[in-house]
Image (cartoon, rainbow, N blue to C red):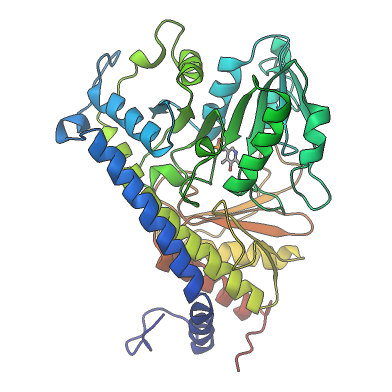
Length: 430
Ligand SMILES: *Cc1c(COP(=O)(O)O)cnc(C)c1O
């Protein structure tokens, strides 16, 4: 915060403001490099819109079947352009990122096929899709699709040497997760994804390579489809929705594969041809337009959070100047009290539901209580400032999102002040 707050309405102690300023000075150069990626991606998005001759008429929606919805077609073509892909499926009907990935899995895999994850255990919600957890009879396993995984090596990285052992002629699809997810490991950079794909291709030319792109879009200047991936999928209430898309998911990649996923979303024979947009087109266009900017804001927020928490002596991952490929920032607290106090602080600093006192709760699918700070405009939107934490050792909070950098800063500073006032940390400034 650059002013001295002559008329101080921020409610922060002077110590906190001083420390915040010091931290911001230290991370100036990192912000510069975030800005240059942002600028490049913003141009990429605008160019795709221009190339598709985006006009006002594309903002009107259809009802019913949604045949001949020009706006929808242009939106999907814009996405394809941005991802350098043959085709894309971008729909508000896709309820979650999990569903977008599910469409790819169920759309392409057939009984007897094998799915191989080369980045270890997949994201939590995919466990029930694959059939690693849950017994409701609707998983890939129940359709006779096998699953195997190559675990990460001791450094928590993809073990390229083991890919050879994992792949065989039955491997129909390989799953790569770009983001760290909610784990203490690094996200996969696009060049690393490219290397993994090269290792796969040395052995198997036919397997479909699917990248779970959630939280990764626009963090770098390339997407996985530009590093050899056949298909990517993600959520519109994360990065590519820019905080404006009210709901939805996307898939981009090879035309035939996108079609297979579309046939699972709608019906065989209907594919991409139906799906009324109900007037949502404009919001999805505006969302992807804002996305590079909003992603940069949340990255700056993540870097600020990292640098500040590090200064206060906490273990963090990634480090402020680590190369990132997703927007998640993990902070380790080592005790439940600090973790809960921190998350409550994030909530207190949010624009919506700031007055709510967060409580850890028994969330379905978890083996411990979970605390979630989410004071955003769109339910569950994690491109907005949010923090999630399973309340179990080593008590890690995963902080992500922020439509506006200042709001992340406000959230994090409120959290720190909250902890300090409750005697959970000491702010020493020299
Ligand atoms: C968010 C996310 C998903 C999908 O989650 P939804 O909550 O269903 O949108 C999948 N994989 C990763 C890595 C994610 O971060």
